[in-house]
Length: 59
Image (cartoon, rainbow, N blue to C red; front, side, top):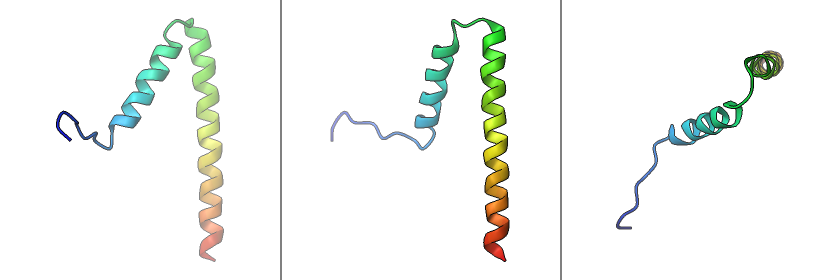
């Protein structure tokens, strides 16, 4: 195992962010805002769905 480096738990998330930044880097600002808005809507809807499932599982 000489020469191997263990990754921290944040390395995968950081790699994803760097990949997305490189992927969207060449797009115009309006396209980034649209894509960001769509991602935000999906995150809010998934969070809401998770919250509802969490509430019904307790009962």
